[in-house]
Image (tube, rainbow, N blue to C red; front, side, top):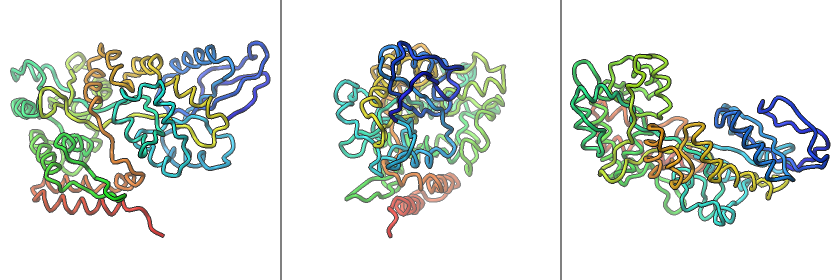
Length: 418
């Protein structure tokens, strides 16, 4: 939102400790930016702010840190026409963009992204949910996704000399690891994000849009093949079939020392080592294997996009900030600082030196996001995919259970009438 500063400038959100006189005594436009807690370090934001204000002498940044809890309603309120003191740039979860774009309250950034933002190299799992038809509302910022975290010593004991490259190799290796009191893999029965990748690898979808209506598609032949692979892999461990990866937290299970592999974001390894320091230097990472050796498996891509509200007081200034944050220089710096995947496949080399992040980047190149509809949030709120997975893993016939789950998804994706 456009504001005038006469004498003092403060960058909020506890990013700097004080305020000072503006150089030269002249006024500058202030661009208010909402970023989420822990998305970027304070030091990164200090450096970015200093560089941006040095190279854009007519602009100042007011960066305000937000909590994820309750953010959807807070953003919706800020996007309302006439909202006072709202932000000019907002960081949103990549799969949240449809929630806000659906109201027509975001700026269409298609022209800016086509000019010089390198959109042809964007990670698909960030770019696709930021798009509605031919309009690009969300600009990819950073990504994170699941990889396989494994015990190097367990692989050595099993005679496995390199991480598997294909899903068939992964099953065979996991079967070797599943012995002598060690689970070959700990995979909770309701880890539907991991299942989604297997379904996408088979050419299936969680849901498809046809004639402007969304339908659940877990009952297609391709989606059933993905569930069958999940069933076979999950059976090579003792993950609970009626719970997800957070119940109990899989980091704690892995830290117990009786698990050879888990599927998780690489950062979870830090929690594992904190709980079991003896595993330091014993953990490795590899991309989720694909159907063939030439391509890693498809994975769900999480992360953030940047959006610009329609009610911004200065669209040009707002898009200038977006371009700087998502440009190669600072996007690469953010990825290195925070162990993220950069927003473009062409920048993956910037994180090649970190084994876990490099494994993420390999998967992110083929990453996906959940179906691009604002109603998908209703699916996740009471997720029929989880119940479907539990029933199949308990021995139920997959086909009728998939049809039942697909009908439930279709019902949740139907827009409210009246």
